[in-house]
Length: 439
Image (cartoon, rainbow, N blue to C red; front, side, top):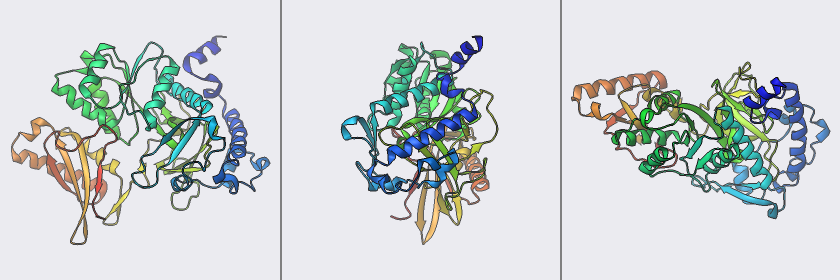
Protein backbone atom coordinates (compact mmCIF):
# COMPACT_ATOMS: atom_id res chain seq x y z
CA UNK A 1 0.00 0.00 0.00
CA UNK A 2 2.85 2.36 0.91
CA UNK A 3 4.59 1.61 -2.42
CA UNK A 4 1.39 2.45 -4.30
CA UNK A 5 1.09 5.78 -2.48
CA UNK A 6 4.73 6.62 -3.26
CA UNK A 7 4.17 5.79 -6.93
CA UNK A 8 1.10 8.02 -7.06
CA UNK A 9 3.16 10.90 -5.62
CA UNK A 10 6.03 10.36 -8.10
CA UNK A 11 3.99 9.86 -11.26
CA UNK A 12 1.05 11.59 -12.87
CA UNK A 13 0.16 8.38 -14.73
CA UNK A 14 1.84 5.52 -12.86
CA UNK A 15 0.12 2.93 -15.09
CA UNK A 16 2.17 4.04 -18.09
CA UNK A 17 5.12 5.91 -16.58
CA UNK A 18 6.20 3.02 -14.34
CA UNK A 19 5.69 0.12 -16.74
CA UNK A 20 8.46 -2.44 -16.95
CA UNK A 21 10.49 -2.38 -20.15
CA UNK A 22 8.92 -5.66 -21.26
CA UNK A 23 5.44 -4.32 -20.50
CA UNK A 24 6.15 -1.13 -22.41
CA UNK A 25 7.35 -2.99 -25.51
CA UNK A 26 4.34 -5.31 -25.44
CA UNK A 27 2.08 -2.26 -25.31
CA UNK A 28 3.99 -0.73 -28.23
CA UNK A 29 3.39 -3.81 -30.37
CA UNK A 30 -0.35 -3.75 -29.68
CA UNK A 31 -0.57 -0.04 -30.40
CA UNK A 32 1.60 -0.24 -33.52
CA UNK A 33 -0.72 -2.87 -34.97
CA UNK A 34 -3.73 -0.68 -34.20
CA UNK A 35 -1.97 2.36 -35.71
CA UNK A 36 -1.35 0.49 -38.97
CA UNK A 37 -4.92 -0.75 -39.02
CA UNK A 38 -6.25 2.79 -38.59
CA UNK A 39 -3.79 4.37 -41.01
CA UNK A 40 -4.99 2.11 -43.84
CA UNK A 41 -8.20 4.12 -43.90
CA UNK A 42 -6.31 7.30 -44.85
CA UNK A 43 -5.98 7.99 -48.60
CA UNK A 44 -2.21 8.54 -48.27
CA UNK A 45 -1.49 5.22 -46.53
CA UNK A 46 -4.12 3.04 -48.21
CA UNK A 47 -1.89 1.60 -50.93
CA UNK A 48 1.39 1.99 -49.04
CA UNK A 49 0.24 -0.28 -46.20
CA UNK A 50 -1.89 -2.67 -48.23
CA UNK A 51 0.57 -5.57 -48.13
CA UNK A 52 1.62 -5.13 -44.48
CA UNK A 53 0.40 -8.02 -42.34
CA UNK A 54 -0.50 -7.06 -38.77
CA UNK A 55 0.54 -10.55 -37.63
CA UNK A 56 4.08 -9.83 -38.84
CA UNK A 57 4.41 -6.99 -36.30
CA UNK A 58 5.83 -8.90 -33.33
CA UNK A 59 8.26 -6.37 -31.85
CA UNK A 60 8.72 -2.58 -31.85
CA UNK A 61 11.67 -3.06 -34.24
CA UNK A 62 9.28 -4.34 -36.92
CA UNK A 63 8.33 -0.72 -37.55
CA UNK A 64 11.42 -0.70 -39.79
CA UNK A 65 9.41 -2.66 -42.40
CA UNK A 66 6.97 0.24 -42.77
CA UNK A 67 7.43 3.21 -45.15
CA UNK A 68 8.75 6.59 -44.07
CA UNK A 69 6.56 9.70 -44.03
CA UNK A 70 8.00 13.15 -44.77
CA UNK A 71 7.02 16.79 -44.46
CA UNK A 72 6.65 16.87 -48.23
CA UNK A 73 4.16 13.98 -48.03
CA UNK A 74 2.04 16.07 -45.66
CA UNK A 75 2.22 19.00 -48.07
CA UNK A 76 1.35 16.87 -51.09
CA UNK A 77 -1.66 15.32 -49.32
CA UNK A 78 -2.92 18.66 -47.95
CA UNK A 79 -5.55 19.15 -46.62
CA UNK A 80 -7.33 15.81 -45.95
CA UNK A 81 -5.11 13.05 -47.33
CA UNK A 82 -3.95 11.73 -43.93
CA UNK A 83 -7.33 11.56 -42.21
CA UNK A 84 -8.55 8.09 -41.26
CA UNK A 85 -11.81 9.27 -39.69
CA UNK A 86 -14.79 11.14 -41.20
CA UNK A 87 -14.30 14.91 -41.11
CA UNK A 88 -17.15 15.35 -38.61
CA UNK A 89 -15.16 13.40 -35.99
CA UNK A 90 -12.53 16.14 -35.76
CA UNK A 91 -12.80 19.11 -33.41
CA UNK A 92 -9.57 21.05 -34.03
CA UNK A 93 -6.78 21.58 -36.52
CA UNK A 94 -3.43 23.32 -36.45
CA UNK A 95 -1.82 24.57 -39.65
CA UNK A 96 1.81 25.48 -40.31
CA UNK A 97 2.63 28.88 -41.71
CA UNK A 98 3.63 27.56 -45.11
CA UNK A 99 6.28 30.29 -45.41
CA UNK A 100 8.80 27.84 -46.92
CA UNK A 101 6.32 25.87 -49.02
CA UNK A 102 2.82 24.42 -48.99
CA UNK A 103 1.29 24.55 -45.50
CA UNK A 104 0.69 21.35 -43.54
CA UNK A 105 -2.37 20.58 -41.42
CA UNK A 106 -2.72 18.38 -38.34
CA UNK A 107 -6.22 17.33 -37.21
CA UNK A 108 -7.40 16.24 -33.75
CA UNK A 109 -10.40 14.29 -32.52
CA UNK A 110 -11.69 14.97 -29.03
CA UNK A 111 -9.90 11.84 -27.82
CA UNK A 112 -6.66 13.05 -29.41
CA UNK A 113 -6.92 16.31 -27.47
CA UNK A 114 -7.56 14.45 -24.22
CA UNK A 115 -4.54 12.21 -24.83
CA UNK A 116 -2.39 15.24 -25.58
CA UNK A 117 -3.52 17.05 -22.41
CA UNK A 118 -2.72 13.95 -20.32
CA UNK A 119 0.76 13.68 -21.83
CA UNK A 120 1.42 17.35 -21.10
CA UNK A 121 0.15 17.03 -17.51
CA UNK A 122 2.50 14.04 -17.15
CA UNK A 123 5.42 16.20 -18.32
CA UNK A 124 4.66 19.11 -16.01
CA UNK A 125 4.05 16.93 -12.97
CA UNK A 126 7.36 15.13 -13.60
CA UNK A 127 9.23 18.44 -13.14
CA UNK A 128 7.58 19.27 -9.82
CA UNK A 129 4.61 21.40 -10.92
CA UNK A 130 1.55 20.76 -8.75
CA UNK A 131 -2.04 21.88 -8.23
CA UNK A 132 -1.80 25.21 -6.41
CA UNK A 133 0.94 26.53 -8.69
CA UNK A 134 0.18 29.53 -10.91
CA UNK A 135 1.19 28.87 -14.52
CA UNK A 136 1.77 31.73 -16.98
CA UNK A 137 1.96 30.82 -20.64
CA UNK A 138 4.08 33.42 -22.47
CA UNK A 139 3.91 31.79 -25.90
CA UNK A 140 1.64 32.28 -28.89
CA UNK A 141 -1.79 30.70 -29.14
CA UNK A 142 -3.81 30.05 -32.28
CA UNK A 143 -2.27 27.87 -34.99
CA UNK A 144 0.96 27.48 -33.00
CA UNK A 145 0.63 24.22 -31.03
CA UNK A 146 2.93 25.26 -28.17
CA UNK A 147 0.51 27.65 -26.50
CA UNK A 148 -2.58 25.44 -26.41
CA UNK A 149 -0.60 22.28 -25.68
CA UNK A 150 0.89 23.66 -22.46
CA UNK A 151 -2.36 25.44 -21.60
CA UNK A 152 -4.53 22.32 -21.57
CA UNK A 153 -1.83 20.29 -19.85
CA UNK A 154 -1.54 22.86 -17.06
CA UNK A 155 -5.31 22.93 -16.58
CA UNK A 156 -5.47 19.13 -16.62
CA UNK A 157 -2.85 19.05 -13.87
CA UNK A 158 -4.83 21.60 -11.84
CA UNK A 159 -2.69 24.73 -11.95
CA UNK A 160 -4.19 28.21 -12.06
CA UNK A 161 -3.46 29.06 -15.71
CA UNK A 162 -2.83 32.55 -17.14
CA UNK A 163 -3.03 32.51 -20.98
CA UNK A 164 -0.99 35.69 -21.37
CA UNK A 165 0.36 34.82 -24.83
CA UNK A 166 3.48 36.36 -26.35
CA UNK A 167 4.68 39.96 -26.21
CA UNK A 168 3.71 43.02 -24.15
CA UNK A 169 6.61 42.46 -21.78
CA UNK A 170 5.68 44.99 -19.11
CA UNK A 171 2.23 43.48 -18.80
CA UNK A 172 3.75 39.99 -18.55
CA UNK A 173 5.87 41.15 -15.64
CA UNK A 174 2.91 42.81 -13.94
CA UNK A 175 0.88 39.61 -14.22
CA UNK A 176 3.74 37.67 -12.64
CA UNK A 177 3.79 40.10 -9.72
CA UNK A 178 0.02 40.42 -9.25
CA UNK A 179 -0.77 36.69 -9.31
CA UNK A 180 2.44 35.25 -7.85
CA UNK A 181 3.30 33.24 -10.94
CA UNK A 182 5.44 30.23 -10.03
CA UNK A 183 5.70 28.36 -13.35
CA UNK A 184 6.21 29.79 -16.85
CA UNK A 185 6.43 28.51 -20.42
CA UNK A 186 8.50 30.76 -22.68
CA UNK A 187 10.49 30.66 -25.92
CA UNK A 188 14.25 30.87 -25.13
CA UNK A 189 14.86 34.00 -27.20
CA UNK A 190 11.94 35.76 -25.49
CA UNK A 191 13.26 34.71 -22.07
CA UNK A 192 16.50 36.52 -22.95
CA UNK A 193 14.61 39.55 -24.23
CA UNK A 194 12.49 39.72 -21.06
CA UNK A 195 15.70 39.78 -19.02
CA UNK A 196 16.64 43.06 -20.72
CA UNK A 197 13.21 44.55 -19.94
CA UNK A 198 13.43 43.54 -16.27
CA UNK A 199 16.88 45.09 -15.98
CA UNK A 200 15.61 48.34 -17.52
CA UNK A 201 12.81 48.36 -14.91
CA UNK A 202 15.25 47.71 -12.08
CA UNK A 203 13.49 44.42 -11.28
CA UNK A 204 15.25 41.50 -9.62
CA UNK A 205 13.09 38.40 -10.31
CA UNK A 206 14.77 36.41 -7.52
CA UNK A 207 13.70 39.12 -5.05
CA UNK A 208 10.52 40.53 -6.60
CA UNK A 209 8.83 37.49 -8.18
CA UNK A 210 7.77 33.99 -7.07
CA UNK A 211 9.08 32.03 -10.06
CA UNK A 212 10.54 28.57 -9.48
CA UNK A 213 10.10 26.59 -12.75
CA UNK A 214 10.52 27.61 -16.41
CA UNK A 215 9.85 25.48 -19.49
CA UNK A 216 11.84 26.44 -22.58
CA UNK A 217 11.10 25.06 -26.02
CA UNK A 218 9.91 25.73 -29.59
CA UNK A 219 13.41 26.64 -30.80
CA UNK A 220 16.88 25.15 -30.24
CA UNK A 221 18.91 26.66 -27.43
CA UNK A 222 22.21 25.86 -25.76
CA UNK A 223 23.14 24.90 -22.21
CA UNK A 224 24.73 28.34 -21.96
CA UNK A 225 21.32 29.96 -22.52
CA UNK A 226 19.77 27.65 -19.92
CA UNK A 227 22.42 28.75 -17.40
CA UNK A 228 21.79 32.44 -18.11
CA UNK A 229 18.04 32.07 -17.64
CA UNK A 230 18.40 30.04 -14.44
CA UNK A 231 20.88 32.49 -12.93
CA UNK A 232 18.84 35.60 -13.76
CA UNK A 233 15.31 34.39 -12.91
CA UNK A 234 16.26 32.08 -10.04
CA UNK A 235 14.35 29.17 -11.59
CA UNK A 236 14.95 25.59 -12.63
CA UNK A 237 14.76 25.42 -16.44
CA UNK A 238 13.40 22.27 -18.08
CA UNK A 239 13.84 21.37 -21.71
CA UNK A 240 10.74 20.49 -23.73
CA UNK A 241 10.54 18.79 -27.12
CA UNK A 242 7.62 18.44 -29.47
CA UNK A 243 6.44 19.09 -33.00
CA UNK A 244 3.01 19.77 -34.43
CA UNK A 245 3.02 16.60 -36.53
CA UNK A 246 3.17 14.58 -33.29
CA UNK A 247 0.48 16.76 -31.56
CA UNK A 248 2.79 19.53 -30.40
CA UNK A 249 4.77 19.81 -27.13
CA UNK A 250 4.80 16.82 -24.81
CA UNK A 251 6.62 14.31 -27.02
CA UNK A 252 9.66 14.31 -24.73
CA UNK A 253 10.51 16.17 -21.53
CA UNK A 254 13.19 16.37 -18.86
CA UNK A 255 12.52 14.92 -15.42
CA UNK A 256 13.98 16.47 -12.28
CA UNK A 257 17.29 14.61 -12.80
CA UNK A 258 17.73 16.47 -16.12
CA UNK A 259 19.88 13.85 -17.81
CA UNK A 260 18.03 13.77 -21.11
CA UNK A 261 14.41 14.05 -22.23
CA UNK A 262 12.14 11.08 -21.56
CA UNK A 263 10.25 10.30 -24.75
CA UNK A 264 6.84 8.85 -23.93
CA UNK A 265 7.20 5.49 -25.60
CA UNK A 266 3.65 4.42 -24.86
CA UNK A 267 2.57 7.21 -27.24
CA UNK A 268 5.48 7.41 -29.69
CA UNK A 269 7.73 4.77 -31.20
CA UNK A 270 11.22 6.24 -31.60
CA UNK A 271 13.98 5.47 -34.10
CA UNK A 272 17.31 7.19 -34.79
CA UNK A 273 18.52 6.80 -38.38
CA UNK A 274 21.36 8.04 -40.52
CA UNK A 275 19.82 11.02 -42.39
CA UNK A 276 21.61 10.02 -45.62
CA UNK A 277 21.24 6.23 -45.70
CA UNK A 278 18.08 6.03 -43.50
CA UNK A 279 19.62 3.00 -41.79
CA UNK A 280 19.34 2.74 -37.98
CA UNK A 281 22.34 3.96 -36.00
CA UNK A 282 23.65 2.35 -32.77
CA UNK A 283 22.37 3.63 -29.44
CA UNK A 284 24.31 6.71 -28.39
CA UNK A 285 25.17 7.84 -31.91
CA UNK A 286 23.80 11.07 -33.40
CA UNK A 287 21.20 10.73 -36.15
CA UNK A 288 17.79 11.89 -37.35
CA UNK A 289 14.83 11.33 -35.06
CA UNK A 290 12.00 9.31 -36.65
CA UNK A 291 8.67 8.99 -34.81
CA UNK A 292 5.53 6.89 -35.17
CA UNK A 293 2.35 7.85 -33.32
CA UNK A 294 0.86 5.06 -31.20
CA UNK A 295 -2.23 6.75 -29.73
CA UNK A 296 -3.34 9.15 -32.47
CA UNK A 297 -6.95 8.31 -33.31
CA UNK A 298 -7.77 10.58 -36.25
CA UNK A 299 -4.49 11.20 -38.06
CA UNK A 300 -1.81 8.60 -37.29
CA UNK A 301 1.65 9.15 -38.76
CA UNK A 302 4.09 6.32 -39.45
CA UNK A 303 7.86 6.72 -39.37
CA UNK A 304 7.73 10.50 -39.67
CA UNK A 305 11.14 12.00 -40.46
CA UNK A 306 11.41 14.96 -38.07
CA UNK A 307 14.74 16.26 -39.48
CA UNK A 308 15.79 16.84 -35.84
CA UNK A 309 19.24 15.52 -34.93
CA UNK A 310 19.68 13.80 -31.58
CA UNK A 311 20.66 10.47 -30.03
CA UNK A 312 19.33 7.94 -27.54
CA UNK A 313 21.17 8.23 -24.24
CA UNK A 314 22.36 4.86 -22.92
CA UNK A 315 21.59 3.57 -19.44
CA UNK A 316 18.71 4.04 -17.02
CA UNK A 317 17.42 7.21 -15.38
CA UNK A 318 17.47 7.47 -11.56
CA UNK A 319 13.82 8.58 -11.66
CA UNK A 320 12.85 4.98 -12.44
CA UNK A 321 10.94 5.59 -15.66
CA UNK A 322 11.72 2.99 -18.34
CA UNK A 323 11.01 5.44 -21.16
CA UNK A 324 14.25 6.05 -23.03
CA UNK A 325 15.88 9.46 -23.06
CA UNK A 326 16.76 11.72 -25.95
CA UNK A 327 19.76 14.00 -25.84
CA UNK A 328 18.96 17.67 -26.41
CA UNK A 329 18.28 18.44 -30.06
CA UNK A 330 21.60 19.32 -31.71
CA UNK A 331 19.91 21.06 -34.63
CA UNK A 332 17.92 20.20 -37.72
CA UNK A 333 19.45 18.51 -40.73
CA UNK A 334 17.83 21.22 -42.88
CA UNK A 335 19.14 24.01 -40.58
CA UNK A 336 22.73 23.01 -41.25
CA UNK A 337 24.57 25.22 -43.70
CA UNK A 338 27.86 24.62 -45.49
CA UNK A 339 30.55 27.30 -45.58
CA UNK A 340 33.85 26.64 -47.32
CA UNK A 341 33.16 22.92 -47.18
CA UNK A 342 32.42 22.86 -43.44
CA UNK A 343 29.06 21.74 -41.98
CA UNK A 344 27.83 24.31 -39.43
CA UNK A 345 24.77 24.42 -37.16
CA UNK A 346 23.57 27.77 -35.73
CA UNK A 347 23.50 26.23 -32.23
CA UNK A 348 27.31 25.98 -32.37
CA UNK A 349 27.55 29.75 -32.67
CA UNK A 350 25.19 30.25 -29.73
CA UNK A 351 27.20 27.92 -27.50
CA UNK A 352 30.29 30.07 -28.04
CA UNK A 353 28.59 33.45 -27.68
CA UNK A 354 26.51 32.74 -24.59
CA UNK A 355 29.59 31.54 -22.69
CA UNK A 356 31.19 35.01 -23.02
CA UNK A 357 30.01 37.37 -20.22
CA UNK A 358 30.37 40.54 -22.28
CA UNK A 359 27.94 39.27 -24.93
CA UNK A 360 24.34 40.41 -24.63
CA UNK A 361 21.21 38.37 -25.25
CA UNK A 362 20.80 38.71 -29.00
CA UNK A 363 22.80 37.80 -32.08
CA UNK A 364 22.32 36.72 -35.68
CA UNK A 365 24.29 35.00 -38.42
CA UNK A 366 24.33 36.57 -41.88
CA UNK A 367 25.51 34.53 -44.88
CA UNK A 368 26.27 36.33 -48.12
CA UNK A 369 28.23 35.89 -51.34
CA UNK A 370 30.79 38.40 -52.52
CA UNK A 371 32.82 37.93 -55.73
CA UNK A 372 31.58 34.32 -55.85
CA UNK A 373 32.92 33.64 -52.35
CA UNK A 374 30.59 32.73 -49.47
CA UNK A 375 30.96 34.93 -46.39
CA UNK A 376 29.70 34.65 -42.82
CA UNK A 377 29.17 37.58 -40.45
CA UNK A 378 28.12 37.12 -36.84
CA UNK A 379 26.39 40.23 -35.49
CA UNK A 380 26.60 40.28 -31.70
CA UNK A 381 24.97 42.60 -29.20
CA UNK A 382 27.24 43.40 -26.26
CA UNK A 383 26.26 44.64 -22.82
CA UNK A 384 25.68 48.36 -22.15
CA UNK A 385 28.77 48.64 -19.98
CA UNK A 386 31.08 47.15 -22.60
CA UNK A 387 29.77 49.21 -25.49
CA UNK A 388 30.62 52.53 -23.81
CA UNK A 389 34.18 51.47 -22.97
CA UNK A 390 37.20 52.28 -25.14
CA UNK A 391 37.69 50.81 -28.59
CA UNK A 392 40.68 48.75 -27.53
CA UNK A 393 38.53 46.78 -25.11
CA UNK A 394 35.89 46.23 -27.78
CA UNK A 395 38.59 45.01 -30.14
CA UNK A 396 39.82 42.51 -27.54
CA UNK A 397 36.29 41.16 -27.17
CA UNK A 398 35.87 40.95 -30.95
CA UNK A 399 39.18 39.10 -31.24
CA UNK A 400 38.17 36.65 -28.50
CA UNK A 401 34.82 35.92 -30.14
CA UNK A 402 36.47 35.45 -33.54
CA UNK A 403 39.13 33.12 -32.10
CA UNK A 404 36.62 30.95 -30.20
CA UNK A 405 34.22 30.76 -33.16
CA UNK A 406 37.09 29.69 -35.41
CA UNK A 407 38.07 26.99 -32.90
CA UNK A 408 34.48 25.67 -32.79
CA UNK A 409 33.49 26.06 -36.45
CA UNK A 410 36.86 25.54 -38.20
CA UNK A 411 36.19 28.62 -40.34
CA UNK A 412 36.81 32.27 -39.50
CA UNK A 413 33.69 34.46 -39.59
CA UNK A 414 33.62 38.22 -39.53
CA UNK A 415 32.37 39.48 -36.15
CA UNK A 416 30.43 42.72 -35.81
CA UNK A 417 29.76 44.07 -32.32
CA UNK A 418 26.61 46.17 -32.14
CA UNK A 419 24.79 48.21 -29.50
CA UNK A 420 22.42 46.54 -27.05
CA UNK A 421 18.83 46.12 -28.33
CA UNK A 422 19.80 47.08 -31.89
CA UNK A 423 19.20 43.75 -33.64
CA UNK A 424 15.67 42.91 -34.86
CA UNK A 425 13.37 41.24 -32.34
CA UNK A 426 10.02 39.49 -32.59
CA UNK A 427 7.63 37.81 -30.19
CA UNK A 428 7.78 34.44 -31.94
CA UNK A 429 10.74 32.25 -32.72
CA UNK A 430 14.00 34.12 -33.09
CA UNK A 431 15.41 34.44 -36.61
CA UNK A 432 19.07 33.61 -36.00
CA UNK A 433 20.16 32.87 -39.56
CA UNK A 434 19.86 35.19 -42.57
CA UNK A 435 21.04 33.49 -45.79
CA UNK A 436 21.40 35.95 -48.66
CA UNK A 437 23.56 33.73 -50.85
CA UNK A 438 20.74 32.78 -53.23
CA UNK A 439 19.28 36.28 -53.56
